[in-house]
Length: 89
Image 1 (cartoon, helix red, strand yellow):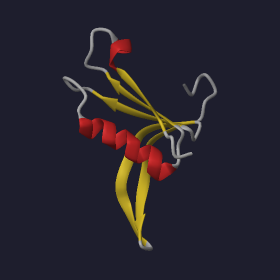
Image 2 (cartoon, helix red, strand yellow):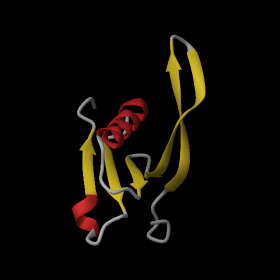
Image 3 (cartoon, rainbow, N blue to C red):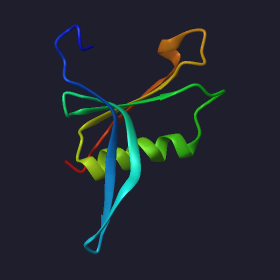
Image 4 (cartoon, rainbow, N blue to C red):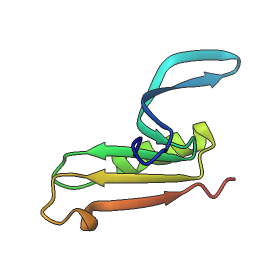
């Protein structure tokens, strides 16, 4: 993606703020593309609700419009990509 000229940030810390208290090590996004797309990468048997909640939380906390959850434990990768849209924006 970087070779294509896209801005890519790896392991981006996403702090949590609650009632003016900031927790710096709240979450860590696997990849953030162009400050808009959250990529969460997994190698699991199958996705669970926890994986979905993780991506939705990143979208909400970071005000990002789009998230992709990708499971590399698959014979056919396209069957293991889940798209999320932040409807709050």
